[in-house]
Length: 298
Length: 285
Image (cartoon, rainbow over all chains, first blue to last red; front, side):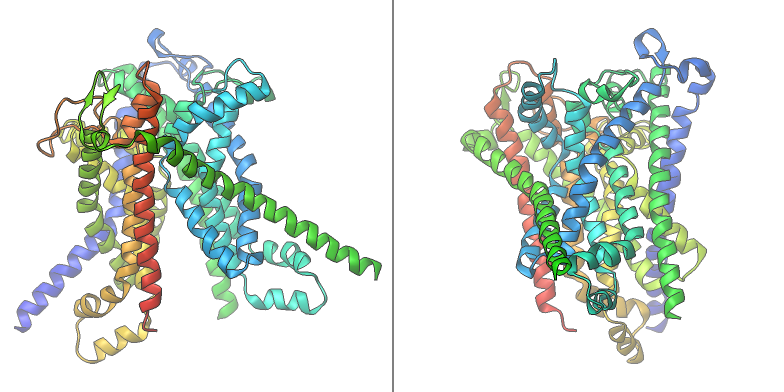
């Protein structure tokens, strides 16, 4: 009895440990398979070609710069939309809204997080882009602007929920102290609560950026997919093509182990590294913050 | 007195401004869902749900896409739920505060941040080609499962951690082993919270298109899949196809397909919300 119990206990502990470490294994596997299929491009195409401004794989132009800039343009656009809305909503939910309003707003934001991006892309094609084309009198509504608006919308739930958590975590005594010395609630929010939560808000923004830069279907459907380098602010009114959309649109049609196949994986490596940097930056802030609070408590 | 008044005027303006920002966030959500319901409902019929597509998908139903999404969600659950809950148990109940644990956490944060299309590339490289599963439900489910893992791990861990330490102490002091304590005391208490996380994770997986593009999704298939090694149609990919790849597609069918996806999401959200509120109500501490 005792030994079977021990054996079972040890077996289960082993299984649980294995699943615990699986996350690390998966990250390594993903990185390995990206490198394995993406790095050969460095031997097949000269550097000058790979980092040129021309993406036209059928004629062996593999310049990934327009794709990177396309991703950055829509991500910046998304941030311009999502940062004020997200932060404002988070403050409203955390600091101002009465309880019942909060109970209505939070599930709604969560619902947005669950809406499939392909569905928002579909509405982008059918409703938003014709609307913008008419309003702004553009040659096409499939542009960086349309993509930015939708992407901003898509990254909102991330920003709202993480920023709201950060605001919630600010101790009540901070607010009480501010109110006690005569600050209005509004002054307390801007001069005490928001500054105290700033590292969490920064994390929220970074995670929102990660969400936007990695979004695929919506961008592929509404951004217009023209691989061009931006020359000025008018890039927002013209079509752009992102890294994600390029992979999604072209991977289905390339032969395995062709140069085109390798370059798409190389774009995947670039995307992976972008998201790595964004997420590690975001999480370092979280870790630093816990350490600081632990110091204060001890 | 004057400054006093202006301070509160500022506050009123400020609160008004924040309310407007919140409206700008929330109203589009309601409009989007409402618009899809309104435009899509006329397309929904028994035939639309249960029939095969006809005339190059321009008529008939979307049954194979519904079935495909069901299989993929099921497959994702089979792989992601045990691994995810296992990892959450490890992090909450076993893991020491060490550099290794720190690394696991960093890996999970990373997995959560990897773009979905990169998961697609990975699934293509490992499951479809290297392990030779081909474009199949198996390859697609595994890809989606790894993508869903971080959601399930982090929500489950939170649920497990919220069970008070005293519960564990009592169980161990009565002679329970670590696993018995987890199995009989901690898990049942955390279950509703875990369920919420699982449902939200699966909802995300079911709505994803990019990871299944090269691992399982088929443009059109005349029959339903027979085994996990078959490719299948899937709802999100089907919506993408009929919205962008098929000329002369009746708008009704597009809205109808979008509506079925939205209903699916609404139902999943409802399950998650119910399970969460029930968990709160039942809480014994």
